[in-house]
Amino acid sequence: MTLRTIPRAAVGGWLKVTRAPLDATFGVLGRESAQVAVDRVDATVRAVAGAALRDDELLADAGARRRAADERARALRLREEASLRAERGADQAAERREQATARRRSATQRARTERKRADEKREKSTEQASRTEQRRRAANDRAAAEAEDTIEARNRRTKLESLDAESKALGEREAALAARDEAERLSGAAAAAKAERKRR
Image (cartoon, rainbow, N blue to C red; front, side, top):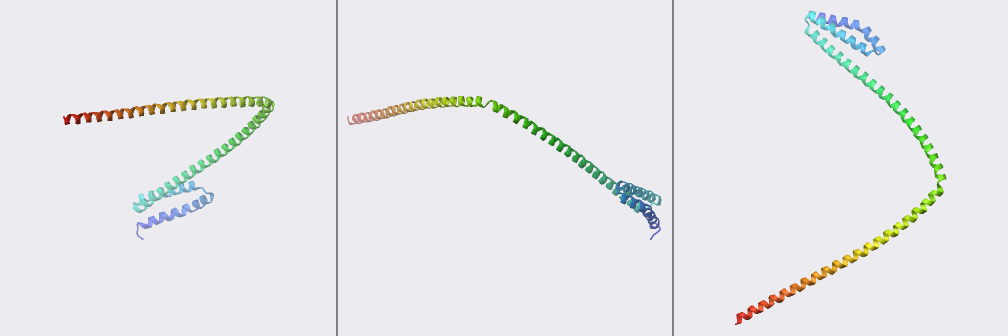
């Protein structure tokens, strides 16, 4: 142990003895924020002593303890914020559940009322509905008959158009064959005439 380490050890021992009851008390009470405050005071005392004694190691220890206290304070703040957000979320979820329950009750009551009204209306209009159904069926039968007539007329028209197209195609083919035959005849006649001229 050197002359420089003796004051450092004395400062450390004094701080340890001084803060021991505080640490014990705050630990039992769960007052972590108070423990962070004690850590900062510890770091400040070490910094002052390190400056007074010109002890770089004590100053470095004070800086490290201050940074650790800052990190603990930041972690504590984040935990408190998370806890507050969770509490708010739980309150909001409970409120939403209550609102949903109220909406379900209201919807159930409305459904009952509407169902009762519909039943009464249905009972009153059974005969009218039967007449309406008969009229609807008659209209459907007429529409089906008209549709069938329209389809038959369209089919006849399509068949006639197809026959016309086939007749036209046959006529065009016959004309083409006649033209080809005529061309072959003319070509043969020209060849015969040419051969006749050569013999002369």
